[in-house]
Length: 172
Image (cartoon, rainbow, N blue to C red; front, top):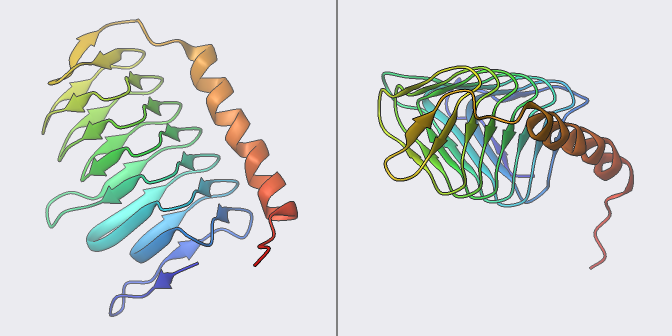
């Protein structure tokens, strides 16, 4: 996997995490136990830091960045969907950020919330715990997140973490 230091900014990846060989990790990025980073995902901790908790998946093509003002923090048991873009925001534990969605600077996604596929969470927006954010710009539907959907999505990728670490092999 392309793993880069940037000056004195070094990635720290737990030994039980799985980072696909085609993902790119740059700078001050920490990845917690049993978390996973999938093909073509980019985590770039240059001007700030990126912290990914335990049992969290960063799926294919996701772009995770930070800013000079705000770090990006992703809690435990989260799912960050394919092609999502997170920039200087906070995703609390047990949340799901859907495929193709965007969460911008200083936004905060509460525990157990869902950002629907394709939604755009504007800078500084706060999504309360257990809410669904959908649309462009995102609108909040309180209490509409499905905890079972979030739990299942996170568990599938924890299983995939162990499976891929054990059985993935390149054939060319």
